[in-house]
Image 1 (cartoon, rainbow, N blue to C red):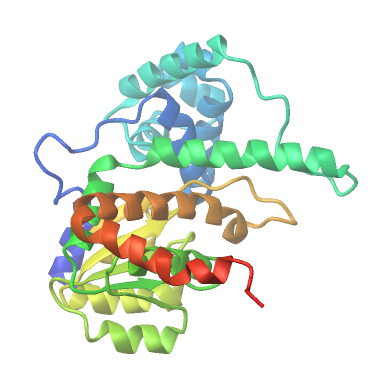
Image 2: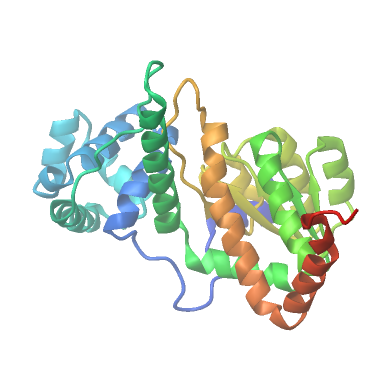
Length: 315
């Protein structure tokens, strides 16, 4: 790994404007952060994360020693978990836990869960999935860093060309973003073929933008073209559910997504699409705002060009 990559990985907020550096997550973002980060934690750190998410009120009353004893871990593990969740220390985590507990006490608990059984009637499936989708969107919104989103939008708005990489379910999201950008007059391409992605990434340079969409943060077919784009000087963006994954090493801006809980019928790669589409819409609207004078006429022209295809044919 060269020096520039190491520096990029070590300081993910280096491009934010003064005063826009992210602070510790608020109470609402804490629950989202636990759900997003827990799968990539060590087992001992998972025990701490699960404890604070499951009983924020109880854990808020515990000292660092008390929480370590409750979870069968060490004080060092509790502190490391706090920092991984975005807090400078355990004291800051306790304050967020107290705030989360107060929020939960003031609201009603959800009436359904996302645990769908094989024999569930379809009305229960609809209710559970709707609840799960709402939670996923709320978690993603709470966990997104506005400074990182704004920096990505600014780069895209002034880009000569935008390339988007994704495979599988993420390829559908990549195509969605590119379709939106094309309709407001930007030059954008979606690459699901890994060979084509790499060969076109070689042509990128400063002033271009490359966006990688990967829930796991380690999809090789997405990582490779992003690395090439990064090395060529393009501004790189990662949309991922694993901000600590390998993809972050080659991303100037990391946009974190949340995921609905996995099930046998709905693995993470499929359920992640909901949160990815929210991020894509945030990017598109942000770019459209900054390029409104050209985006609005382009969008109107594209609508008019297709209008006859949405009307009954005249015989």
